[in-house]
Length: 281
Ligand SMILES: *[C@@H]1O[C@H](CO)[C@@H](O)[C@H](O)[C@H]1NC(C)=O
Image (cartoon, rainbow, N blue to C red; front, side):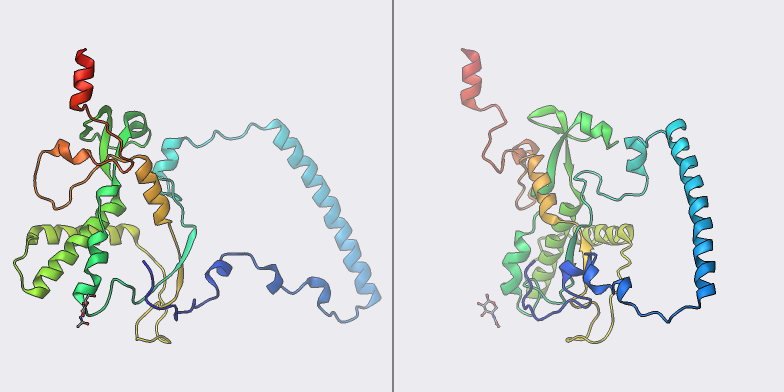
């Protein structure tokens, strides 16, 4: 999402800098000035330091012996870590590594519906439809899914983020038809389903980013504030690597199997007339 203007500044610092340990900002210890000490005090400090050193050496010898002779606890298994606290996403293994600013306005906003329509219409859930092999499905403990028509070992899944995009486009269309007063092609139940899916996602994520108030134009919260995000492009790449070649442009019901014939790289996974003739020979 490209920002409309670059005038928003990160509140803290440059986004790259906020997440880097910046040694130059720390005052080196040797520069700090100390008042002169009484000679007797220096002796007491030195004696105390010697006692601590002796204790430290003894403890270290003991620890070294323990590391050699005590067996380590068993490693966490994959299944435990997947159902423990997530530090990375389940399927694509994404972490929050990307600092992004919050933009109050982007190319998707404004007062002119026709000007933003193309962008919203480009949002699609289709690239997020993936075909996952049964080994992977059991490793991740995913529910059994509809069979991928061109490989019975694979199940069909729609990645959550892409379902969210599909819902955003559906809601945009609903708003557009309503705003323009034209017949609404989106069923109210579909619009509410999408709103509710996004609601559930909001609650599930329980995002605790404290958006600062004040000091921004137009009035609002969080403008220019940097938070750590997952890399959507990495998710797109992962989805592409597992593509189910799905295309379902206008949500008109049709033969399900025909929707799995749009491979991004032009591959043909299904039996063509030529292939069938070939096999007959
Ligand atoms: C709205 O956007 C369209 C397409 O970009 C443009 O042709 C039209 O002039 C705009 N309307 C207004 C009122 O600015």
